[in-house]
Length: 414
Image 1 (tube, rainbow, N blue to C red):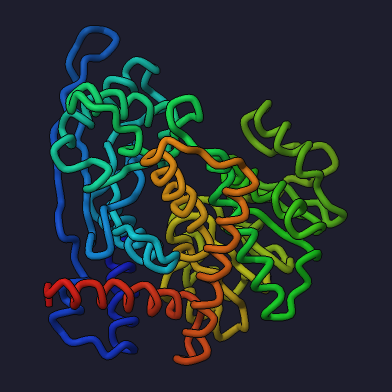
Image 2 (tube, rainbow, N blue to C red):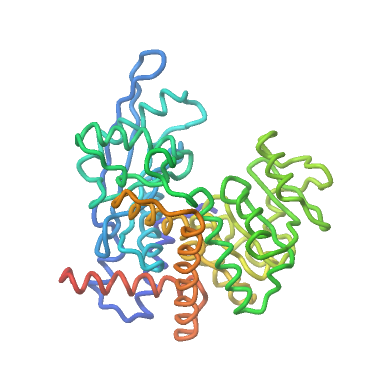
């Protein structure tokens, strides 16, 4: 079964709106992006030919502040995927109580088939197309799937060339040398582990028990390491990536596994482990599961087989609405992406603040402030759960949607 991510996102908005008793006009406003940009990008390739790429930038809602969200380069990018991601970013920034809205962008391309020079040309041409509607007071992009800090530097440089101003705050997750912040590289995973720590306290789950990671990219690798650092223990027993999965009930060494993955490109045949199907990793019995791959990995077809007590979403949209209900009935606790993966946008906001004043904080300050922000956000979601008697994702949506709706009303939009 295939899922339309934007239809999933809209369904979540509708559920929250009903429980908040929002009027029909407010609900309709929050169901759709405010602005959508579609552009054609001509790019000179290494062989001197010109190839046409298609790009998007969507501002979902800017009632609370400038749009904020990543830019991904992916061959399967669609306008509905970008809409959904921009929608979720809107609630994510609101739950974290940041003065930002939600946005997202992308280019339809296969980065694995492009040279570094071709990727740079795409990045710069994307900014030429989008320059009029991005900027520190309008829309602040960041990296996403198959983009990275180097991509942001190319984009920042192109934007500054166009505007003839030094404006490092127009993009976040940059290298330190050009206005990046300490603590950004591991912020998404770190924020997720902080939420797991709080959830284990509240729900009485053994935080130092077993944990599993589905998707061993940047976020998954960092979660493997940070879980033990922040929690002070825990046993990693199963991991998967796009090529397969591995399992060892006696535990996998996270540091050695990260080194192995970086060297070999996948986790298969890691010494001391048993190779298993990547789908089996999601269903491994454990205290904590970190889904850190792509959308809709947990759905109505496999939700009944999920055995972890806490599911901490580091990926965007890894659980469908149907699966949420099944997991809730099975007494599983889903820490939704709009809460648990908010560490990245929180520290991106810190980067914007530091760029604004050209004064940068030490790493421990960034970690401490991230901890405070995301811990406060977690407990606001718990309060909504208690008040409305709903599952965690719907509680998080209630918090985010309520804050955005209030801002829209105060502005007189509805």
